[in-house]
Length: 74
Image (cartoon, rainbow, N blue to C red; front, side, top):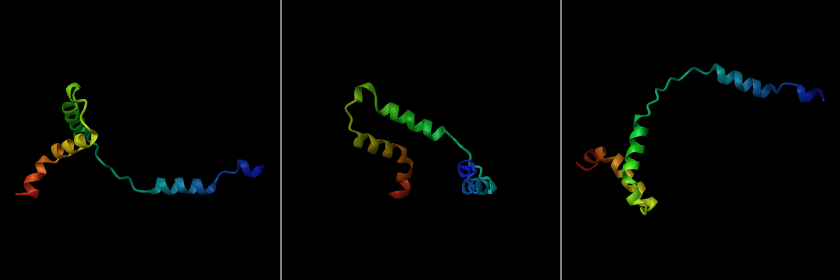
């Protein structure tokens, strides 16, 4: 019964090791995500509700990667 209330040393050690890791700072930017949702909203309107998901994904891929076309095919 005493073992039930004994702290799990494996978990405690794992948490301590995690807290010792150096901090990594990554800047977050929601602009790209907002632009993607804006483009998707402009593409899929009330009049275009019958568009297949596969076609929608292809159009969104092309729209978001249009700037790379000149570097791929000069």
